[in-house]
Length: 499
Image (cartoon, rainbow, N blue to C red; front, top):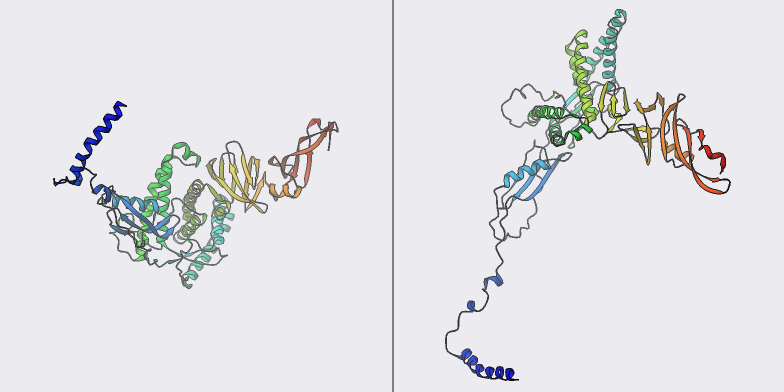
């Protein structure tokens, strides 16, 4: 009670003093001495300073993952469009250019204005006028190649060699006739879309194709980007693809040299003013095909082979041709090997005009005499009427057919026909399973008694001692030509069971 009374008395004494202070004529202290500063209540804090790229957009698609131009805006408001009519770079490359351009361009630290203007649209780029190139037909190319190979083997038989030489001379005349007809044929109509590098297949008739060297330059640049990424892999991962570190380094070096030549052709084709000629580019004509280092399709190899074959035929005699074609065939074999190595999946049909057969065995893919050691590739082909993938592993070959996995030792694809042990496989495993109405657990493909045979293990419901139901594993052998069951095998104790 005493404490409460004291506090009450003190309050009564202080009240008039407070009232007098509020109503006196003494100057009132400025508000800043008794309240928070006004600036903290109505003004935002300074924005952080930002440097580098603020906006980045690629435009004008010129290939798979490649673009002719890129719009860049830096944080200080500077904006520009990179690229021109002949440029074609990956998005990653344009981004790197943008970073280098904006690296020292920073905001002022003030709150940016709300920019509502739309991003710039892709600028129109005139397409370089395609050029026309004549190619001999695939049939004549293959026929000439085969005659040269036969002549090599018949060198010791003068009569046979003379007979083949006459055929070569006659065929050479036919090819010369084709070249004249092609040169006098109407030029192909140009379109705004890129024209395929290789012409459609024609039988014993000249082919005229429109090609665009600037499109090719874009392809070369994309290849350089891809192989630079490969060079960053460790040796173990490179080995899975069939490459060595030395091969990748050589490919990158050759790609850079080849790109300079193709870029020079593109500049000449589009009429762009370029730097003075160098030892690399001064002898390259727009109509000349630069030797591909790594290829994206079998047709790319075929086109190069045709052009080199025609050149050899027109410039050399029969004896010189044999030696020249040996060297050319080595070139083609090297391109095919790198083509297989560079692809995770490859349609066997892409090699039709280049090799006679493809063999897939344990840890290896072989195209005629070209062997690629690998366990990371898929060869795509048809087994019967259905598409399958064929994969070499360290211990066997796996054929993937829908949801089925078929194990085998080796398969050969020749003229788009898949065979095992020299016998054609006419029906796929999935076709056989559908015909028989079964769901195999495991499947093996072998050649048995001059037949391609599927050995399939399936579950069958039976009764032990005629009473107890349970599953047994039955093996059936099925003819891969017609799907008929050849034999059935049950476990040794099957005599104690019934269906």
